Amino acid sequence: MKVISFLHQNKPGWGVVNGDAVNPATSGEYPTLLSALQAGKLDEAASGTTGAAIRLADITFLPVIPEPGKIFCVGHNYEEHRVETGRDPTKFPLLFLRVGESQAGHQQPILMPAESTQLDYEGEIAVIIGKAGRRIAEADAWNYVAGYSAYNDGSVRDWQKHTLQFTAGKNFTGTGAFGPWMVTRDEIADGEELTLETRLNGQVMQKTTTASMIFSIPVLIEYISAFTSLQPGDVIVTGTPGGVGAKRVPPVWMKPGDTVEIEVGKVGILVNSIAPDSTKF
Image 1 (cartoon, rainbow, N blue to C red):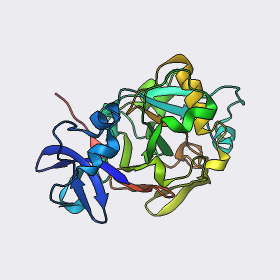
Image 2: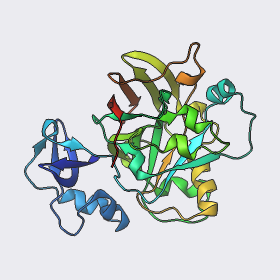
Image 3: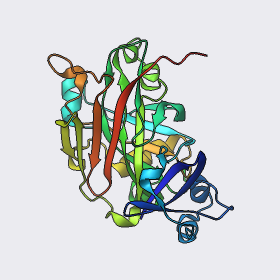
Image 4: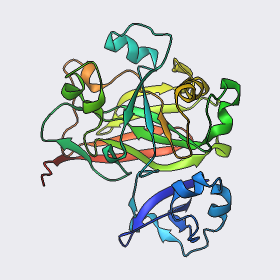
């Protein structure tokens, strides 16, 4: 099934997508998708989506998990991207963290910071964790997956390069995107090869499959859970392929008015426009 988080008439909710509508979850016991995951009751709560269907055209999409406890991002996890960045091969995954505030939902604008013009796209596949685990063995890792989504790990490249750490360039408000929904694990075979494509204003910029990952999803889960506990609703953003804007000649940056699409096979298409952000308060 496909599950989403949304706003309708300025009220947050979540539910199951059916065609061009969503059936909202009506149980007050699990008011958010995250709370249903944390309780281990996603299927039960989703079966209670008996409220009147709402057209997708009438909602505002939120990030699939609006406030995840942890967002782990994996750098240089496709060989083509590792080569284009000039990075040496590594024995272990390169990880950094994003914060929830840095995310936007499907059909919401990704924000171009006033401090930079170097806003880059990074199409990725997101894995949403479904149950808590620590020191999870690679062989058991799929059992901890709730589902999958598309992710745009938008990067403010000049700020990313201020230091050897990526934090600043990866966490400007609203520069990433997460959605449109989570497709639950039962819809995709464990280890099934998925396609990943990024389009900017209709032009294909990145195209690959998960067969080109350097570190597989089970390996990432095993590695991350060795140093911290994975919790329901945590997100692992599994890396971007070659073709990022920063490594093109000349570089290609996203700009206000652009439209960027991230398509993941068997999941769907995450679509965002680009808009300026000069918020000050």
